[in-house]
Amino acid sequence: MGEVKLTPITEEALQKANKKATQIATAPSAVIDAKIEDTAHGTALRLLFRNGEAVVIPTRLISELEAATDAQIRRFEISPLRDSIGFPDLDVHIYIPGLLVDLLSPLIRAEVARQAGRKSTAKKAAAVRENGKKGGRRKKQALAVA
Image 1 (cartoon, rainbow, N blue to C red):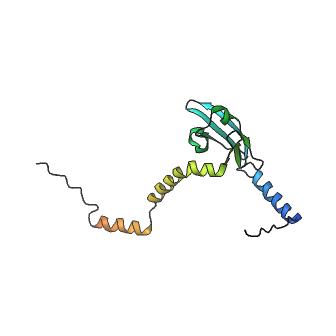
Image 2: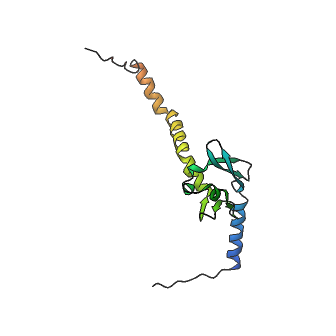
Image 3: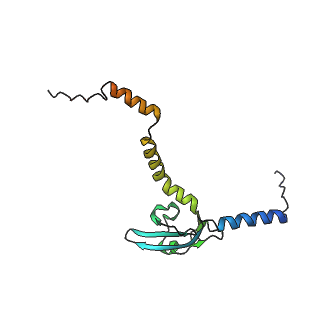
């Protein structure tokens, strides 16, 4: 087996780690409160962030909680760094930024694509003008029914 070499922990390394932890825990996106709520469609996880924003996520959309009982979902804890939520009865820890990316990225990708399709470049505008000079788009031919 290979040799394991451990780097000694210095006072400077500890200070640097503490500074980084403080930045994460006091960031506007840090989770300051979380609740499990009953909704008309089942249970939902409400997250309140340091900047005052909140998000409500149906627990059925969180894959890590698919097989969990109601009691297991209701027992959770926010990490000291305020960036994850743990469910001790399930031995599950969910990184909040990752959860939000997983849930929101399909919506964001669709919106970005929609907006990108609306953009008109100088080249597109010139092509439209040229086609207009030729009479515009061709009319669709009606199919003859025999």
